[in-house]
Length: 249
Ligand SMILES: NC(=O)c1ccc[n+]([C@@H]2O[C@H](COP(=O)([O-])OP(=O)(O)OC[C@H]3O[C@@H](n4cnc5c(N)ncnc54)[C@H](OP(=O)(O)O)[C@@H]3O)[C@@H](O)[C@H]2O)c1
Image (cartoon, rainbow, N blue to C red; front, side, top):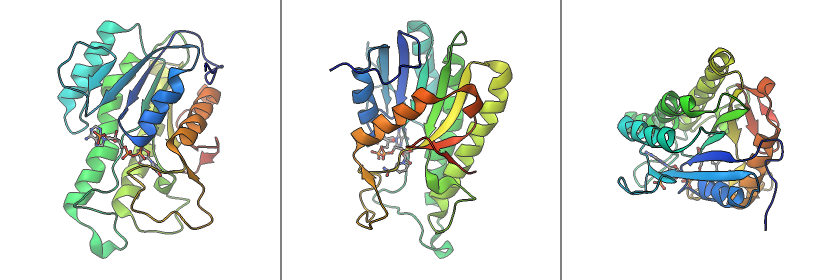
């Protein structure tokens, strides 16, 4: 069934989803596939093969800048420009690491990995992908951030590496918004908080407490697309939650 989730945008949209293999990334692709004014969805993920002849399935590794350069070159050669970029990559835990409950657990390797994926990767993505945004009409550079990256809103503490890496990401998005006013006045740079979503990233953490509203990836993706649809240049630089509410820095 066709939908019109991006009714405030023009036609023939080219959309790049980075992290298209993740829980939220996959759901974003599915939701956008049925959106009437979307022309191309470019699936970009680490699991896509490094070499193939498809221009809509590209490989990227946020730990390897060369893959970002290769990817942006292919997009630049194959598409007229991007209308929307959504970076849905992120890291919280793996078999070796889990988020710190106390400063006593701070570990340089976990800190480094968190920043490499949640912060350095998006910084480099901005460098290589922002030039791909269209300049003749509204365009969006967005990264999925997290409410816990808010410094002002931090009531619980803990999760030092993840929180700090997302706070730094939010600073990048604000900085980009200032630069884009001059470099591409139609471009909007934002962070998005997807809510608590049932994906691999959130799996190990209890979600049964009543104040948690846990979304399926599909529900979250539809909320995020609705937020993107309503974005205007005045919103650039901020991070918004799934309901469209601005999260304080
Ligand atoms: N789930 C939640 O409750 C929640 C809440 C707040 C914020 N978020 C944020 O939402 C975003 C998406 O998370 P998710 O819940 O969808 O998690 P997920 O299912 O674990 O997906 C994570 C994605 O990041 C990709 N990724 C990790 N390291 C990478 C690297 N080095 N290079 C390229 N891609 C890499 C993964 O690729 P592979 O498939 O190749 O591993 C995967 O596509 C993250 O930024 C997360 O912080 C999630």
